[in-house]
Amino acid sequence: MLERLRHLFAVEELRKRILFTLGMLLVFRIGVHIPVPGVDTSQLAEAMAGLFGAGLFDFMNLFTGGALQEFSLFALGVIPYINASIILSLLIPVFPKLKALQQQGREGRRKLTQYTRWGTVGLAVVQAYGISYSVAATGVATGGFLYFITSIVALTTGTVFLMWIGERITENGIGNGISMIIMAGIVARFPAEVGTVFADIAGGAVDPLWGIGLFVMFVAVIAGAVVVQQGQRKIPIQYAKRTSGRRVYGGHTSHLPIRVNQGGVIPIIFASAILTLPSSIAMWIPGLEGIQRYVEMGSTPYLIAYVLLIIFFTYFYSSLVFDPADISKNLRESGGFVPGVRPGQQTADYLSKVTGRLLLVGALFLALIAVLPFLFRAASGIRGFTLGGTSLLIMVGVGIDTWMQIEAHLVMRQYESLVKGTGFLGRRSG
Image 1 (cartoon, rainbow, N blue to C red):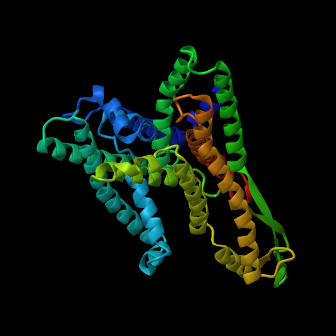
Image 2: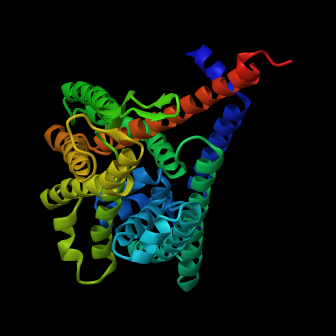
């Protein structure tokens, strides 16, 4: 293991990227502990848990890395950015101009990124006002109008800064920046959650066997997540032979890999972010407090909606990143075909059929992992329900994607070393 780490840090570019990522995550963790002025944070956690419900508060606190209970600059986390990304993704198939921007390459993606940023600012202002109003309603905030102005500006600025950190990590560091921030928050909350479980067991509130069961569940979830995240169906592709002068091209066999879980952790993150909205709105708008019990985290309607949203976002995200018709067209133009399937529309239909079956397996697995903590908590009585499938799946998914990027950098480094060490036709350069 130490030799592996030494090898990673021996590559200068990779070392700089890893250190840059760690430095940005350190800035994030420092910001978590900088509170917004005018709030008594010693009483905030209990007051917010009573207002939102312990389940929703703990879940939002997990996603923000504990920033919510501190009511810090990063109390909103990257949730506004996630919501803005969801809204834009849903609007792209509806509006032809947005669809055209998506197909314009780098320039189009740059404009869509700008739209996402402005949407993040707008949603951050709205959510900052909502959470500031909720905190003021608990009686732990002082300062009146000045408190609202300070809180809204601070929370919105914190979210925009986190968005900037995430983009910088994606561009100059290792892994997807937003996912890395979420994972860092989950990792930071793990010691406190484990302490809660041990406190329940030591206090006699929970049978020690449930602690063993929790450990077994962790191992099973991690193993299952790795298998599903790495699982793929390899569709054989045969390339026809073609002659150009005296040379013969093609005639080889390749394969098209289709992953079981194409969206990774994105469907479960999107579903979790959307389901925080009904409960929050119910607390912000007077007269809607009565519907809180129907949208409370862990309730039957909540779990049903959670499963359906995960399945929806699994298929929806796949439709954005995997187009069977486009792949079929590219295969036909390059002289490739699936053995036993006619090129063109029949190939597109075949790919759609295979993808649909794989996505169903991946979606059901994600849904099972998502509801498993709630079922385990109901059966065992352990309060630390946030310890479980959702958090572990995010950690495993982000960890695998990050490691694959590291491996890609290492392979590229070895390839560059090979090219530099040889001259034309394999001869050693001077």
